[in-house]
Image (cartoon, rainbow, N blue to C red):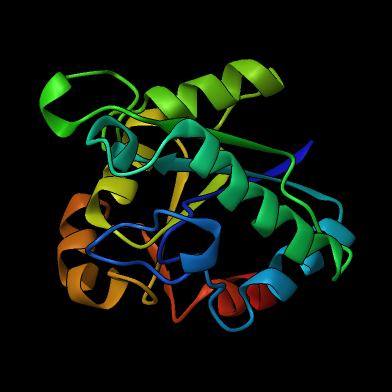
Length: 176
């Protein structure tokens, strides 16, 4: 199986310090949906691992998150793309769960679900916690400068000297 794991906010869609709380607030980054459709066309299974502490904070509900993901999937379908499955952590950073990135729990859930070894699987993120989660789970860490990536690029090399860095998801997909 050819599997790629993506973070959501800052990789697929614009991020917000105020959280993406509704389908109306969800806006794709330029070229990101086309890049996912290209991955699908190349035979990749695309899955998402995303922290969604806004649920734990009471800013939005799981139903709201479902509506956001439905909009994302419908937007992808118009381009012939899809995300196979979305794994998310609803917990607050203070809860100490094993699924909130930088912990590797979400990525381990993905490995279990797909019954695969993650050592050859890229995990594309835009934050240091994504890079750390990728390393902890044995994935290939990929940083995109979209979202928060440009701000943490130098730190990502300290966390993972082998991290690959691209301007955005489209640039990463073009490199495959």
